[in-house]
Image 1 (tube, rainbow, N blue to C red):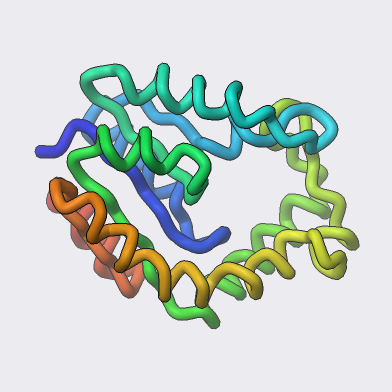
Image 2 (image 1 turned 60 degrees about the vertical axis):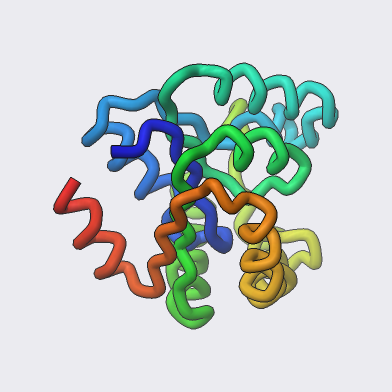
Length: 172
């Protein structure tokens, strides 16, 4: 089985949930790139700091990481042996993201580095997570195949439905 895995997909697709489950099943260290990118007060980490975190984590012999950050893709993708792409339909990801955003906003769930989603900006701001979904979902679908061609060493598992990912996880 793979020992260096990266999980990608649109925000809200379930990257972290799947990565945590795989990490538990395979006893692998897990990291969420969002935790390195979102500093307190939602400040974005300096590029060098973010890349250093990805570099240090992926220098280990075995790991699983989730996130779509192109600013360190050359590090993580180059070191991974398997890439899991959660390529779910837009309607499904939209509803998952909306449900998650509402839950986080209403419960004031603490995220990375003490941050909390603020409900109205998350839902209605041009910089909110819902607007981010509309800016990135279809673009990622178009761009990822070309990016994968640059990393031909990767074993790619492209799941188009949650049931496919669940069946794969169950057989691990």
